[in-house]
Length: 383
Ligand code: NDP
Ligand code: GDR
Image (cartoon, rainbow, N blue to C red; front, side):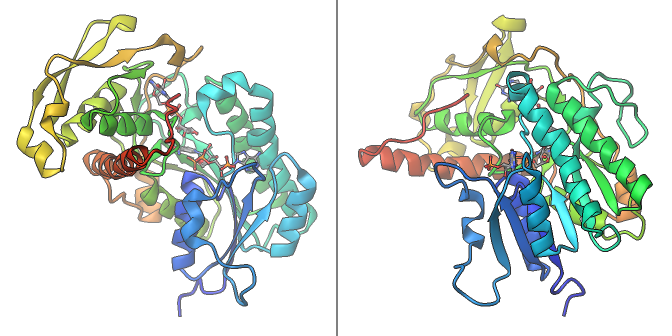
């Protein structure tokens, strides 16, 4: 029997990308998993439906609770009821651009929400037996101070999201030092997957690339193509979250691959995965990408029709509406501490990540196409 058998974890943000992968990971380790889920007018559990258990069966090890990080009373109640050994605070308004539109809500959920979790654990006197993971972010580094960014690099947040997360970071450190609570920050660099939210740039690209290759969409509009990100796979990163909470001493860790790539190159590699070569030209708002070559054999091998693709077609254009008032231009993480102290090593590199996402979106678009042919409405929202 695993030493984790019967341990209880509470995951906030369980319906999100990381929450879904983490829930699956912990269940495999023998944990009893509780998740905090927001009420929504439509079902929002797509990513965890495969884990769902009928509430009428005995000995369930997966339970969802309605709640919200902006409501301290429900947080206190759920923590009291579930008595978790580990809390993973992943819930957040996690979109950087949206945080400029909803700064106050973002501060409330992402900043004060973290305080509400810590304060609940303190008030319930659970500090010594409940470990807390806080989902901190490479966005804290913001305006470049040094590269690669490590646990000692100074922070300079560049969005309401990052400022809210800065509060979350420091209140976690403060509760650890003031009340001896086992609480840690994972400073995670961007991590993606086939279930990444559709409005983050990687998923926006892989969905559009699949559609363009199938002849279902003509263009993809993006913002800053020169931004550089250290992209990893969410599957690898949830393992790091767990490892962080298994250490004797509570500490903060950078989780990253150490490799950075431009948005432009992510686009290029994504098209290449389907046998399509694109070339960028022009500058700023006039930059665009054009199809310059097609590997017809590769396309056919994937069940695609090379006739759907036309040489010289412009497939990517810049739309300034996706620019941010203040941008984070360059992120590249130094994961040395995580590698040496946690023994953490990512299994996916960028090509493997892109392959996983593009192939998955190709399957998804085939399903959409099938539904469309059957006369059903399909999702057509790309923001
Ligand atoms: P997602 O946006 O995919 O998921 C966010 C989750 O938080 C969803 O379950 C969402 O619920 C929930 N949520 C949002 N607001 C509230 C609220 N007020 N109360 C309760 N739940 C709420 O994010 P990721 O899975 O990608 O990220 C997980 C965490 O890690 C976030 O805190 C994010 O900021 C942070 N992070 C992410 C990185 C990444 O690259 N993915 C990198 C570094 C940090 P619903 O489904 O209903 O919207
Ligand atoms: P980010 O992720 O802001 O790094 O935050 P996102 O994928 O949104 O942007 C990455 C970079 O791509 C540029 N970009 C675009 N971004 C989006 N979303 N849409 C576009 O059309 C577009 N064009 C260019 C952006 O300007 C940016 O530079 C993510 C989130 O998961 C956070 O919650 C997390 O904390 C950080 O990663 C680490």
